[in-house]
Image (tube, rainbow, N blue to C red; front, side, top):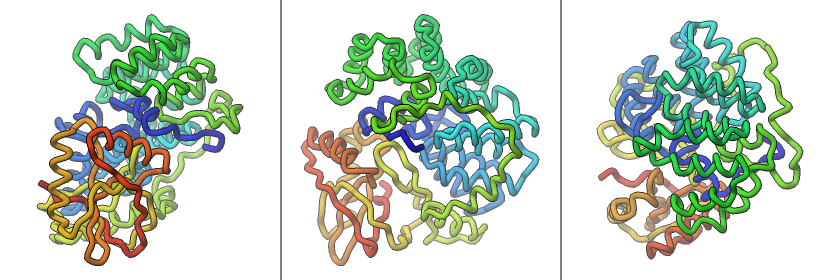
Length: 421
């Protein structure tokens, strides 16, 4: 992604809220990652519990890949899809999943061979259309994207496809059809609709009305978001798609790069197994350890699949029925926000639970951790991608009376999720 920069937390939250992007915060299940009414994080924990008992459970591997993708961890998702492909190489689902991973990584060219292979294995356009449509949008091929979205609106990802369809129509300059497309979601109270409508207006040049809508859906954010909104209409088509769907904005140091010049190249389908082997981050190490345990009960096991929403990369909690205490490997140095400090980890966990209960909107999708070093314990959130993201969230915390300080862990610190309530 040379030439592009991830926009800051508030801007990216606009771009990703309501499942507009794979790095969105978790929401009630509307798509293909779960057949139940549950958050993506809850679905991932459920699938990981099933995989602890049977590491070859194909449906759980695919479900875990989709849930990890919904939460923004493309590396963990790739690992799950690779395992699913090894279990059942004749199924189109792992190939479709790996295509979605490439799209979420902002690499539409790499995604196309996966989608082609998925279709060869029996996938329908409705199954791959939501993700392949976004790949086409990123390449500036809006007509192809819209054909895929139309097909996907009859499938499991219908709402997400409808949102992406509205944005694609706006990228094409068709504001009226874009607003008509999003209207059914508005009628049923979809919380993301105001933001999608704001982007539709901004993409078609109506920045004043777009800002008015943003001020309604995200009060007091206008000064932060205004530069982003004002530039949207001037971007190339592929850049617009990357900005509003993935939160990727052209780097001012290299504004000439555009997805619009990219075209699918017919190549042999990549090997999902080989792709997974190249992933060496600590996010997959814990998953490997968990899945190696097969059906043997192991209270000390934990999945270290770090899920990465826009504002923070985090490790999903595995419910206490499966994990009593997380085993923390030496942690690389990362930037966190410290909310409190003391010598009682249990009290810090209770404090975080109270904060989430009192301010559910602010802490939606934000997990808490207890960092222990020596005799001290810290309540922290994060880690953050950079100081600017940390500062933005610290400002939000300050509005509710929480004085958050930046904190960087050392390799010897033990960092685990707060205890479940």
